[in-house]
Image (tube, rainbow, N blue to C red; front, side, top):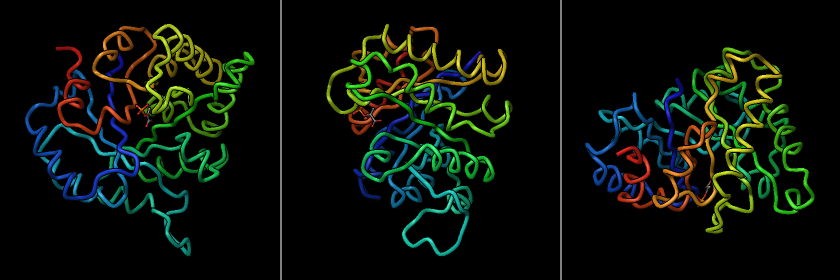
Length: 251
Ligand code: PEP
């Protein structure tokens, strides 16, 4: 059985003080992590505060990016080794905003995934198609291609533990959610791709999130789909009440 995982993605919002206020507002109200895992992905500058103020809570902490080398002359980059040392659990990689604005390639994402495992954290690997690609009918090939590239060289054991986030670009921050059937269809295709690359057990174990305008009003419908194991949520994760409604969707 896969444990559902709901992750907020704050993007480049909130400072350490706002992070502390958010954590105080959600204190004691997260679900049992054996039922639903609650995660916040925050800007690197907030991670210390996030780790510190969530240390006795069920909250898991994610970075929104890292570099693929542990150290060296890479001015301005974030070391995966330092993130692990700090107590970070997950690192989001390959978000469409990073692919689009910072020219992150499939090859970078694969190197980052390996660096994250090397440092005993887990990647949340994002994938997703543009509206143009979907309208041309190539969305499955596109997304499966991204996943194959991201997983290259990873072991079945590693893939069993990581998280894939399917985020159609046309649904991110637009208020336009993919229908639960569209989301399920692609999450199923991703699981099938993992099955053909690895084996049935690995495909059964890998957790797949849907992301793109997830909110308290649609989370239950999405989570009811058999291949959707969680959500990666931008806008609706930034308000404590709304984040709590998302992670407590089973109540
Ligand atoms: C995201 O940031 O990954 C995201 C899906 O954003 P939103 O929920 O705001 O669409």
